[in-house]
Image (cartoon, rainbow, N blue to C red; front, top):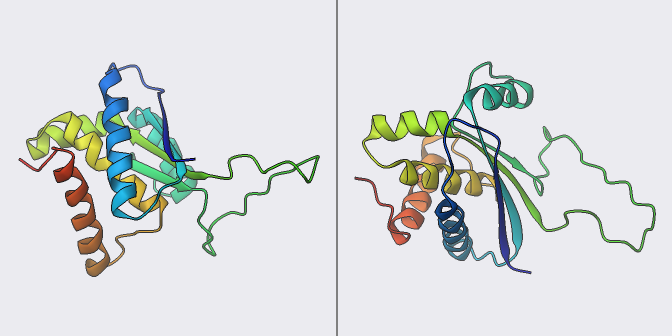
Length: 166
């Protein structure tokens, strides 16, 4: 197996260009390479603010929309709900054994942030994707030091992909 990407759009306000799938695939490969990861699957879903608001409230207890959410499948923190797969035949592999997790991106918020920061929507989506990916593999930004590390990693991948800050 290698690093794989699946993506879909559950929002209707913006047509997601097919090239975005290729760009996200490139970013996944670059971010994975930077982290020494060669296997795993990431699922990206583009949503609107209403949907990401629901998810943010349900899973984080925060009653507002956000730009990106990450749901790591391999995470084993004490606050994480245990995911149990029932398998009829013990010799069968577990479903999704290589899944790193899901990334949910609000296209509405990404568009607003791209305008606010003065760069392209493609760059903002790329940033949010890499940010989400790093969360899937264990990075966080709870303090200034961790945020500095995470930001440097994000920017290095985006620079390599030709999506620098403008």
